[in-house]
Image (cartoon, rainbow, N blue to C red):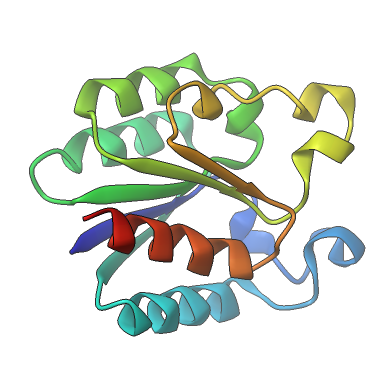
Amino acid sequence: MKILVINGPNLNMLGIREPTLYGKQDYRALCAFIRQSAAAVGAKVKLYQSNHEGAIVTAIQRALGRYDGIVINAGAYTHTSVAILDALKAVGLPTVEVHLTDIATREDYRQKSFVSLYAERLIKGKGFDGYREALEYLAARK
């Protein structure tokens, strides 16, 4: 199984950005955790991070025919991007949405998720472990 893991804006700033919310581990630690979690479920992963909405849309489009599923933390684009939602719908791949924090308990504007309108599952507030849960879900689904 091949899974594309997409991280959106500011995820590359983990460990620096609001460590009381997002933790002190950096993005490299998250990538290592994801790779280890994928290996544990027998999946291959491609990690992708961008701060640019169009680049994320392109990465989703290129996943068609190459990957069996997508794990996405769209960051702030979760709450604003119909384009990312449309790209996910267009490729039709099983998708799990992940957030390090519990967006349901955050600011009002963070409680709306366009990605959730397509994703099969939403995992929020579990930190890095949310990515492992997403990978396990997709691996078990096959």
